[in-house]
Length: 257
Image (cartoon, rainbow, N blue to C red; front, side):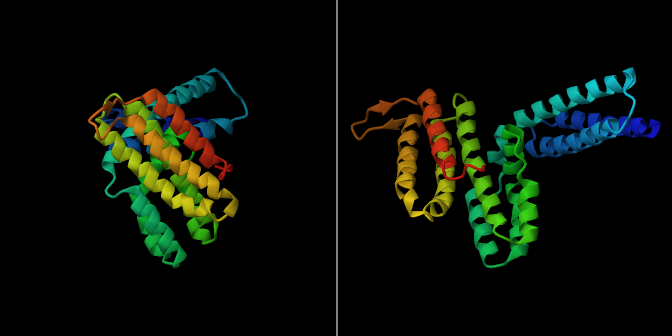
């Protein structure tokens, strides 16, 4: 019993050190992301050691409180860092997703595995923002080499679309319309990978057309200019409403996500 308490304290100290490193480098997305993951892993191991104790005394309760506060801090740093992944990607995610789909279909599994690190920032962001950890799922599905891989990758693409919408709403006041439109086009390019999956069921033909139309209409919420030179200002409130509708309609086809 005493051993578990000692182990918990060791992992707690490790978690604190990693969190301090994350705080120091929170503006550097890659540094903060890695440090937060390490800190969270250490905190979880500390918590696991405490949960194995039979007697809960005051000291153990204090440790529980410390770990809880620490994990809240980890979440805050992760969430603060979640919006900047776009700038650290070496290649557009949609290209990586397409490559992974093609290579898996052609049984080039090594190439699929090598592609995963290129979208790790996306998966880290999704985990921080939505609490959905896709990375273990995609690695497990790749190892199994069955159709679950396609489902997991489609899940990643869906959440990436949702995250881009959230990012546009969050950063709308701080970014140029051109930058926001670029992000939005990435979301639409992602949807075009889901479209063939949706159309596998012929009954979804109308729904797919509806979603594509909604994408085009929602794009105008980021500001536009008519052929007569009339400028339409950006409307983030309307963008939020319409982007939520897009997510709801896509969710109709993928309720398990």
